[in-house]
Image 1: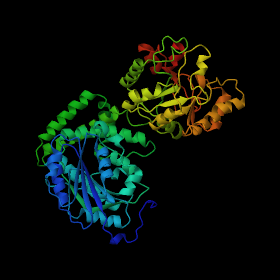
Image 2: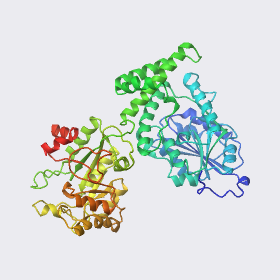
Image 3: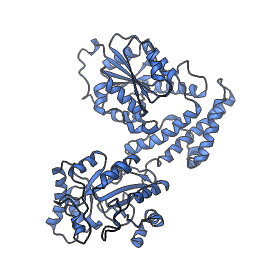
Image 4: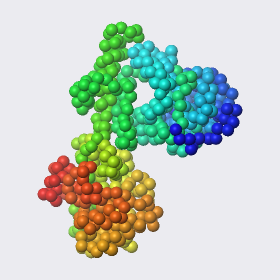
Length: 574
């Protein structure tokens, strides 16, 4: 493992590392209070503080925690429900210790847990993973029994195999040197915000593995009080399916390795479970039945409980694949629908721009139609990864692009696209002193203002991929070589002058890409370029002649459906 980020090891063995124990909790008053009492029994000579982040609990958790006696300083933070990742990040921001020990709210620590973490950290580790066998206070049942067996198998595997994967890092119990955590930027809150669940720890692991020294200490023990009901377990597994898709989209070239819980018979999965997962009513009814049977299976091992357990496992995997389906499916090679918009406003009275200005209400209907028909909105980054590296894409991928960057774009990004967590590309014209649509005014249009440099920079910071639409929006057919260079390389240089990153994407003015223009764009250093020739893009498509479907204000109802379902009809519909 690389060690460029480690602290000097001089005299580490003689130090008492300072720990900040961070626990996020949500509506688990009794359990988290017991966890805090267990922390109070820790025997460690160095500095220790405890930070509990109450993430929107409504069960009086904060007040109950305040009554728990603990020999260490305890900080109780309350916030609106933002998800476990945001809660952990907040706890880390408030921490003062050199080491952050993240614990779940159902972990009951052994008294020597900090001594064990400190011992492994003092040997040079940056990150330490602990062991979490089942706590005796867990309600009996096959779920808690299987959790105990899984923890034992994990401990055996990690004790014998030093080659860890991102899937081995779990926030149930993990310590991280605070400078390392801060250098990584903490947990990605997108994985657990808005009621989402799962993979924020795997994501952190992906950023740790191969860069930092990560070790497993089986003697660092926190006992898992498993109180998750069968119904909640199935809900979490379904959410894990959605999270796995989000993770696979974020790391498209990383091999996938799902949790052992989903490795049932492959034939059953392919022929039965995955097809059934497309039917939400069937998935929901079977999940409800499995949870009902599990609740009534009894605490003692019997043949009946064994059969219920097998049925429950199959229904849990069904729920997992339902979550995968809901998130657009696991990424693979798929053709991409790319849509081209211009202004999102009502300009019905403009003799030139009436067709190219789509009213906001209609734009919203377009997005709703695509989503209802099973399209998954992808980012420009995902499209680039697909074209360049063969990275997979979710089911029915669609990319939204905007030509010209009119001044209505920032409001659309803020009010419409950002709430939907959509990433789009927008193509700016860089060389017109008036920052207006001069090319349209020449043929009788009204004046539309373009997004200026400061706002382009803000759009870029908000996640919009700002691409290039030439310097002056001239048609590129017939331009001399020097003029082509000015419209491509020169426009790309304008981005640097405006304080923007060099653009990766180019959109040809008027969507026409004659061979000399294509070659000029290629020489300028762009990664890909877009036309308005109808069709879908695949990995075999020339990346400098990517097709797009141009969407107009008259594309309502069946016209929009035909254009997006069968892009070739654009040639007929216009």
